Length: 130
Image (tube, rainbow, N blue to C red; front, side, top):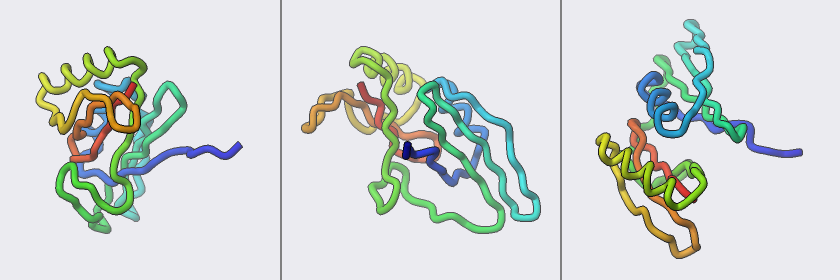
């Protein structure tokens, strides 16, 4: 069986990102991996569905920074299903009240999805969807 094992994100602050995904999406935070010789640190975030995100930081190479929420070549958003339209509404409202940037929605999209789009603390677009 072929499946995507994980997606990796370069980040500036692993702890802030881990806290965000744990707080809002119930991610389980894995142990820290550190390779001092390569200036590399990472952690895996695991979700109940089996999906994983590897958050990575480096001191050796400067990853390209993009404007927060920018549409760009390559990875442009992560979509996280939370079950129902009411769950999308509740989470979007909770996040907005906590100061998380809400870019769009909640709304029904032209292709039939019900979603809200927020930014994680590193400016990555997250579609919260039913």
